[in-house]
Image 1 (cartoon, rainbow over the protein chains, first blue to last red):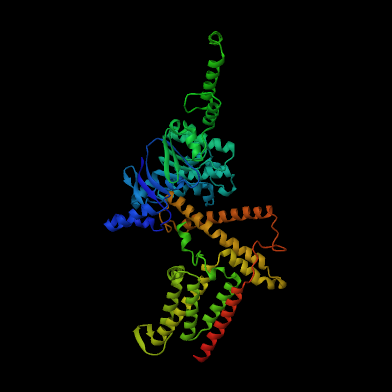
Image 2: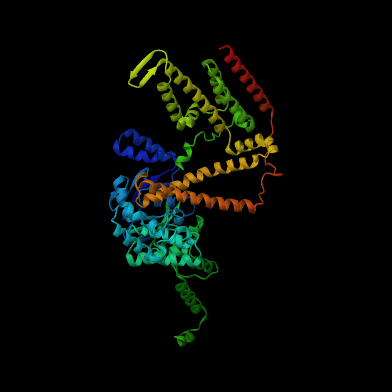
Length: 317
Length: 265
């Protein structure tokens, strides 16, 4: 479980990381006073974020560029620490160095374009980087590498000894993804995992993420611009705007009001946009979150009710 | 982005006479100043340059603190040179003798003089970058090196290379930060853990990204029909104004003055 409690963060103050440690050691009134000034003056990348990510949930994060999404996820495994407030992982404040190290063992963070970070001579070595850093014995490392490669649908025997730079873009991303899975995280944080992939690779990646969530009960936090993906996969969605949480809730709650999302320059799922267009034309459907199938049913029902005489409908039935 | 602010002598954006000067004059001026400082062999001569730099700082409306913090990352050079001089220049009264380590009067005075000289050198260098944007500096380099074209020197290409290098510096700082974060997320706790392996794990992605950027940039330049410096015009051509001629005069006077003081002193 990852909990954010009144988290503030700013990039403007380069001393922000050390400042918090100072505050922990000497909690004098003077530092508290300067902090209050900071709250008033600074430009916050994150402002008063309170949020809980429960075990086993699938949380989507959306927001336009510069809304604080990336900053938010980097707090989740202690890469950056809040200037004010705290982030707790399973009840431990990860501002403490050791707590952050422990948290990283079971929270895997996949950056944007992770294939840009491949470095090893072979696919095997690249995937083994994480487990080796945790000082696992060699046979355990082998086992995890094989398992991770298999779970991203790559054959460890044939691809393990290949240089990662010889692979296609989609395969490279799978290898990078396996590098994080090899740590056997129970929580995965994904920063736009599908960016720059072709439609086929995109879909198989989505399926992979969905199966990790369903079959292995992984907690998933996914940043994405694609509202269709978020609506289909997530059970909770957080919309960020100017470093603050704009709305938060189930996809149904978040997407049922299309206009408020469009107001802050965000898209809504195609189905919801269609509902909106129908509404403008005077056809009112019940405010739900629709999939393509359920939307088709609802429209058929609405049209049927309007045009079909009672008798024919009974005949059809 | 935090690290980007620590770059030595980053442009300090204010409006001032010095900022408006032609970059060629500023480049020449700082080179001339550096030569004089290197030639200086007495305190009066250094004093003249110090006064001169102080005057420029005031004209450029750069706070002393910003000036000093711009050269702070290089202070280790000054400290090392001073220490070397203290220990290796011998002569005069001996103040301290601990086995092979001997601190003498001549050593200390040599160290002090070199410190002042280096400090002024660094200040005159960073004065240029504080008051001139990198684009202007590379433009100035190009036009100043243009006469060498006759001997086949690729002045435009050199300036272009310099401009690109400076343009990508912040980009690579940001990318290396992301790579470091990704490594940390995968359990690499300190940069030293894992020895050479840990270093390559950070350098190789940086190199591949440099090649990737080079490829795309070359493609983008081709797509915009870039074909080198031949017949290329400037958006804002450099043109000498009255203030540039005045500062050229000042420069000549200062040069003559300092060497005169050097001869007398």
